[in-house]
Length: 211
Image 1 (cartoon, rainbow, N blue to C red):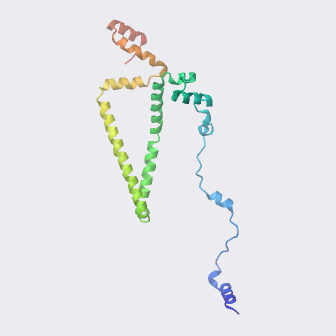
Image 2: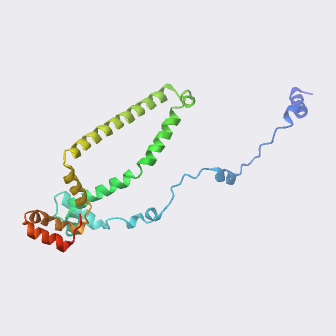
């Protein structure tokens, strides 16, 4: 009996191989797919119909606007509605966007803290290469600089706000909450301030304003 046949017999009789499981020729892909983590974005009405939530400009209107920006044509007629009181709408939309973004801050901070704790774990750090550690160091340095910059901006903003007397800041907060369609009425305020006391008291009585 040659050596090859002897090796085969030894394998067949060896007790160490009795408990080995035979690997199937085919792997069930369906089972693998079931175990995969679902990383898809949860859909909603805004995402499914995002094309409906636009300015509604067609191709020709966009081309007209590009020609206007390039100085090739006068301002398009359709753009008049966008330029009318555009500064106020841009400011208000920016404020709204900022407020919506701020609503995510607690969740983002919690996620950031979780990631920092995970990355700073000694068990995780000891398996990193020198290049990976340098990349982490650069990232942490950028984060530290970002926090310092944000703190400085906040300090400057607070200083600017505190320079305004409290009574004027309270009035400004109330004015900012006035609905857009009522803003033209604010133009009458300077004239009201110059009215004599009798006329002003009469206006207060009619308007039934209560402090």
